Length: 262
Image (cartoon, rainbow, N blue to C red):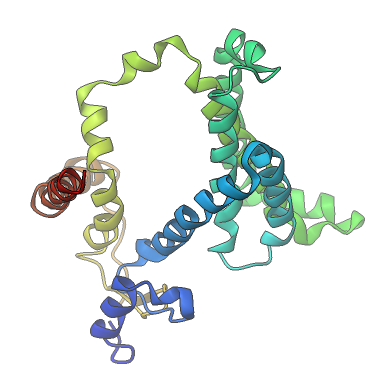
């Protein structure tokens, strides 16, 4: 960390989520999105109470509105449509009276596959040559500044198709194998630890404002196998340890407190 802000400033800012009030200090870069998630979980119950049965229609309006202006906003703001499309997919899949429910159930496999294809196309289209072609094509019609908006549309649609199609796939329970569920259990620890582990032996620091600082010349790439043989096992080990030592005791404490309150 640089001397100003100090590590102490960053830790306090992250612990109490002072980013909400404009303090951008971060020690752990991936944690930039956590306070956005917390705000979302405060916002969602309020929406459900106020809009009740019209929640899907209202959220579609909010999603489209935030999508239009989001490409020029902060990255925190750009997360809004992805949270909302998740709620919409959830509301639709659990509502058997929705007029398209039968269609989704009958064609779940193709809907799910379509979502995967959209994600693959997004990866291909964001490759520099393709992105340059896209900018050139859109520039004559005045849409050169809306690249991100166009990207978000295919990502959101792909996300929606994967959620709605995947929910109705009969094989969804068969992929709940132990290795995958274990990764799901430690996924939050993986999220928080991966930045530290990947940059541990690199001349890289953080500036306290959510950006990397290079303190020296980066070494030559070590090859793909090093990631599979060293980084991934390290990530799983430290994340599993973190879950057992930190997360699990707090989850047990939460259940204990909840049991007493009931």
